[in-house]
Length: 381
Image (cartoon, rainbow, N blue to C red; front, side):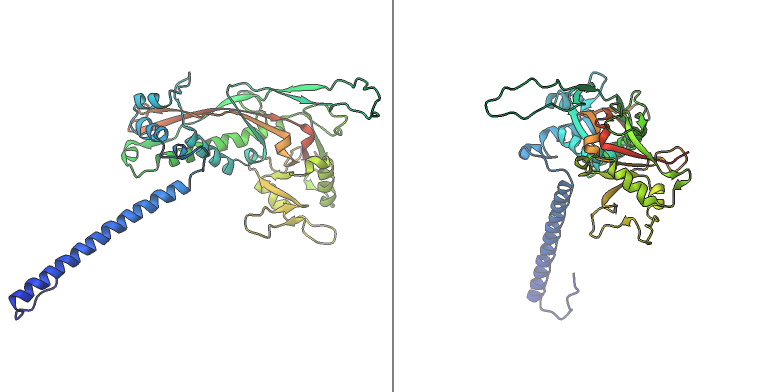
């Protein structure tokens, strides 16, 4: 409060004090209003960063199911509350996360894992998944309006059963973090789980051996034979012309690789390679000195090679004799990822006190679906 001059009359002094009190009260009220607005803006910002799901207001991160799971089970370990809400318990322990949190994990996975973003992903309700694929096409023919319809040849089918394994992550948080209501537990947990899942997935979708994990496309059989002569599930490759990388005419090799693929599959095809290979490819030039590499002209637009987008996948091998460092394919048609739709989480506050671990698991499988849709470049040995 400002000091009142000594010669100020008593009545005027009381009036000054009253006005000062009113000003202080107004300032305090403004501060309270500002804090309230700031809190609301933070809640809106957190909500805007989460995936939008159809189904109405109950399908938000503030729904009773999500709040019961996060505040009841994840923060405090209350199993009674989460059982009464979802009742979804995996036989190997843990609770299936609400679909809002699962969607948040899936969105993070798609942003981090390059092959998942390219491939065909199907959700399954059990560990096994099988799909029949026609290998010879369906026979047909032309007839007149009143002519007979002769029987056509029977189409040939093959069964696709992607090898699966249980993917797990085990992030930890201190109890003090969990007790802090301002701590965005569901966002942090989704990010941690997605990061670990994406690292393991990326390696398996590229080079997985199919034993308790997906069969990577580079682990599939390979051949130089064309589509008509190559066995089912066998990928075609062409040589680079040089055991140290590319020969004197790299453009021709890459163009040949593009045109080993049928025109229908080339719509939506991408190059896949790691950053080391990419650094070499960016330096390649045509005979007249022009770069093969075409940077994206607009922010968010992918860089291109021979007109097709380039995707960096660090699990692809480096350029070396006998390696397959570059893949060109329509992975939406060529590679299948099958996953059990629900991620399960087991809360473990005992193993590593004072930290609480969240053991998250998910069954994921993968395999080449159409070998005609993925082509490889081999560094000749």
